[in-house]
Length: 414
Image 1: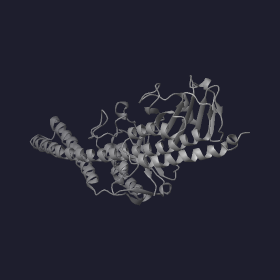
Image 2: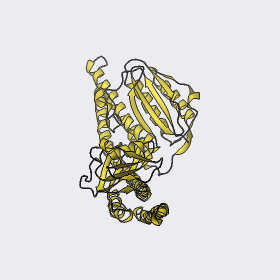
Image 3: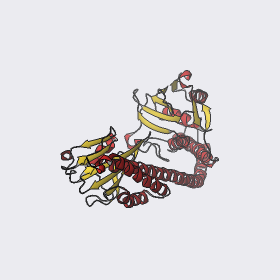
């Protein structure tokens, strides 16, 4: 055995450490970049310089919908926006550095964190050598991260200084991309909040004008009713119009006022609140107001601390009131709490009423949306969603096992 062969293991480690050192210096730069495209382009520049054999790199982003998308590539077979192919998918799904090497290439580095695959199973990926190094971050929203594909046209032997640096580089690239995407989501949320505030202010001004018109209608019909005989059938018709207009105006005032109040509050973290007293007060109020509404409710099932604001009770009031208002017959609502997680508790309100019309189901939580037979304004559930989301929660609708609608409010636990 030659002296070079005897020192081969030591040289391999030294080369691995040296390459890793270059990558650490590089990572300090990518964390200051503003876009994922800039991160990808710098990676294309860095990988051939730092990693032995001058491989052709491809940067793949792992998106929240489990979709893999090429950001940038030096490969002639891939372009930005492409699906990166089955080898990248294999690396992502196994979350393992994956080596695909053609005939004549030795695998000189083995580890339980590395998988060697048969090139015949990957649609021609066996031409040369390709290493797919994934870094996957998983949270309640889904997966994110990056996969670094490195391709050599020919490589006699795959060593540690090829594999480990690819893994290091993928980790830094993924972290930089995830950080940028997080900043982008935060900026979109801020912009969305600003647009909502602006929209509500416009609605507020317009609706004040509309409400003024409603009040004129009420006044006009009131004069007409007063001038007509009690037994005149037209008097009853006018009285009904007065009632409907007045109820619509009152609901509009309440909902717009609540929305403006919420959006004009000083921004800050929601307070820690006790869920049970809020729900108990709401149940007592709605059952007193609506004789045809029955709420089956066990207060002991809701003894949780949650993050919420002053208007959370209006969310529950709105949904329970809808159950009474939008059903002609008496209705029963089952108020239930799902088995909570460490982060959230779900409050469900399942009724045995008519349910929600198919034509409005997808937009039911949008401002101004309402059912075809609804006399309301369509702002109530939009306000409920806005409030819950401002507290860090979510609201959803599904069919109730009792035949009606099942509204589910997810709230963050304190």
